[in-house]
Length: 150
Image (cartoon, rainbow, N blue to C red):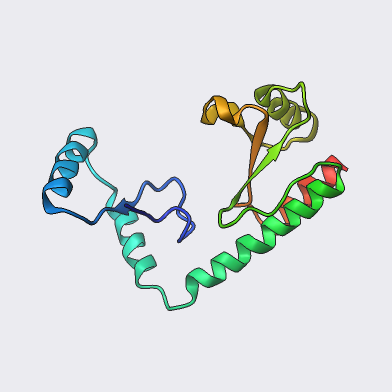
């Protein structure tokens, strides 16, 4: 399975493909055809353009996200949290203070500081006690969020 989400900054576009055993792919295709009517043509065209992008394009995206994640990690650590740089995603999981529920903590950040995070509980019971940040916004917006927390 291959998704365009992270590699080409196309999160939410629901574009990807699968390669493998012909019988398995045929079965997968039959299920997919019964679930929806396919991906909008313009999104498919964008996928073709992404796959045709010059060599090095994805390296530029990787560097951009790494810079943003470093800003977030350093900022959160400077605000008294303890977190580390994740190894290869544009999401950062933050352990919240003991005694807090992730949904409540996430709501509090939104209400008090205008910072949107995702409660860990939304990813299952093991996500409780964590919230998830995304660095899909600009570095300036991430700095602004950190400034609000300080």
